[in-house]
Image 1 (cartoon, rainbow, N blue to C red):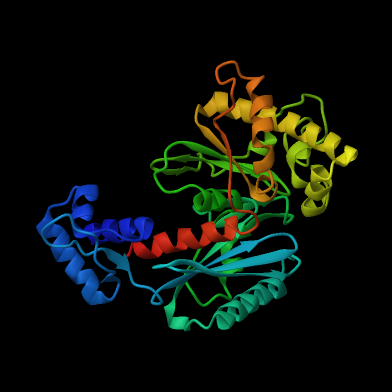
Image 2 (image 1 turned 120 degrees about the vertical axis):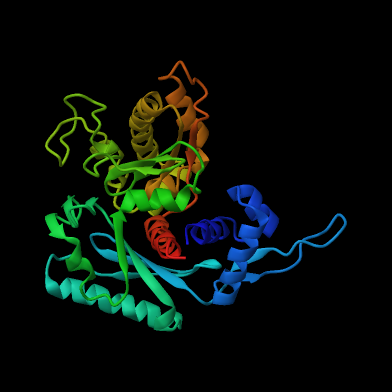
Length: 357
């Protein structure tokens, strides 16, 4: 079973791989690959997706995970909204949708959340039997060992059992913090060491290693928003003064990011001054993260999705604070905006499901 897990995991990552490539990439003998692939094809999980170009001899037949057979859903919970994505495990994300729902820590909310999930699946026209699970993304410290949301400032809850979120859902469920799920969506598996900085209503992130996400002893890793960058500065919701969060949350730029960045592009002086202060703070945090982790830093989240046109300016600012990396080229921007946490939640559920094969 472990060998089949590794094969389907490789196919999930690469989408199309030949038997010879599987043997080479996974260090398996060809008889072992042939036996396991035969079983996977017979089960309907894998199919021969075509013929590769040949330079002579027999043409290699690429393998892929079967499409329209196994699906997972990603659900991202925020203070006022839900975001859903549907992923065909053999194809990728095929549909996304948002829904308004104000979070309330009561049974009615969790029932309504499950109803909206069912409505999303029904509108997707995918048979219930094809849904293999739901990944749920929560803005807070999610501790799977204690089976609880230990704390969520955004949702205003502490020590809420994860079972409350899933008790009305008729599918297998997994949970994770929203920033860690977003990192999973933005950063390919085994990419190497990368710090993901999530710039949303609150500031968080994740440290990604080749072997996976680093969670910390108490599942609190990546709380970059509570690193002090201006001692004695603005008051943070955590109770400290000078944390990065009040300077770098999306609220620091305004309530409507689309309108803010349009004003910035149009040359609005107030927007320029606010963005200058924002990127000054961002440069401090990013340069500190670089010194701590010595790896690439990816700017993501709602704000990160708008930063690509300003990347060189951010790199220059960070470079003036770090004489080891004066060009700031270690800083990159993500390509996803609001959907990243939901996509990551779906991918997390897909990987858990594929571990059964």
